[in-house]
Amino acid sequence: MKVKDIVKITNGKILCGDEKIPCNHFVRDSREVKEGDVYVALKGERFDGNDFCQSAIDNGAKVCIVSKDVREKENDTKLVNTEADKINNSIKENEVTIIKVEDTLKALQEIATYKRMQYNIPVVAVTGSVGKTSTKDLIASVVSQKYNTLKTKGNYNNEIGLPLTILGLTNEEAMVVEMGMNHLGEIRKLTNIAKPTVAVITNIGTAHIGNLGSRENILKAKLEILEGLQGNTVVINNDNDLLHKWVNENKEKYNIITYGIKNKSKYMATDIKSFEDKSEFKVVCEKDESINNKMVTVPVGGEHFILNSLCAIAVGEYLNVPTEKIINGIANLELTKKRMEVLTSKSGATVINDTYNANYDSMKAAITYLKEIKDKRKIAVLGDMLELGDYSKELHEKVGEEVDESIDILITIGKEAKYIAEKAKAKQIIECKDNEEAVRKLKELETKDDAILLKASNGMKFFEIATALCEEVL
View (cartoon, rainbow, N blue to C red):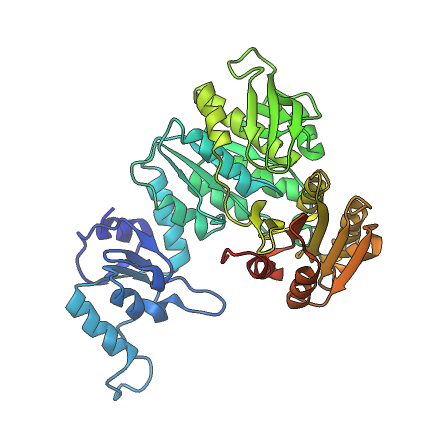
């Protein structure tokens, strides 16, 4: 794309500069701009990206997409050393092009939509209440065994992150993107930008139930992914109750590929063996496909990662990735940080860093994983789950009911986590007022023979605890 293309796509206006300048790399943070980048001046609740154009230019931006004329002085025109003066000087010195649009976020999305349509490649979109990021990582690891694959970085799964991911497309042959939401209508917008050729729904749980009111509404929000689907292929976790029901009601409408452990599905796992740092299972297929009866090793423990691996197998087979490459892709998984990340503390304890986010379903899965670890004292450090609204007390209590006597020590942090403590039956229960107190307690208690689970919503900043305990700086 060139500047003139962006102007046409966004119905924008060139304030200054050259319409023939190529636009290849788009950045929203002026501090991350490099030579030749396009800086998109997004506006947030607490900042206005238009105010950081000078910083972007200083770092090498050759094009800035803005929603106001940053060259104009806003207050006292007698002042010489204003931001506008600096920008005008920089524009002349650095030959910067400025494009003005009505709404920079809308422009970013329009440019990404245009770019997506230039690529005739497989696009796998992943959504669900739990496990989106790890499933995305697994699918990308499998697909990349055959195709040069672009995937969502970290948790770039919203109205800003998804367009930026798509705008990173260069010579890739496939793309795997993650789609998150807090409210109805958000995934609809994302899917119509990404236009997936395969849609994946991992599960319907209780994440964001405070905003949406019921699991049925969460299902409705996740199913919006189908509105932008190119074709009719959907990969579904058939063990989830609401998705299982949806599969039975929509068999004729979509090409539904199911996976599961409990409910009869096209891809199932049997002969499961669980270890502290991995799981092994045999794939059983509904049809006699090449992967049938093959042994698979997942380099992360927990039943939920077996389900996520089955999903990756289903997608890999659909995209004609050879069997051995599928198995190799799963075995060589590299997870996004803070998702069931196994670390070692300074004292030698095993630390399971699952601190990025939390809801009832992911809490239950992580606690189950901790329970299954053998020959170690088990310590669960659990904090508040956010965005649960009127369901918060009930769901924290349900988490507490999962913490039985197989957990040696439970440490809770947060005003809602007190309900976990009230229902828990761990051998020892410690309630802490903040992360610092929890770190002090852990340092007093921990030994090299401990397995310590850290789990809470991202807003609880449990990465601070992981950083304090471990050599790694997170």
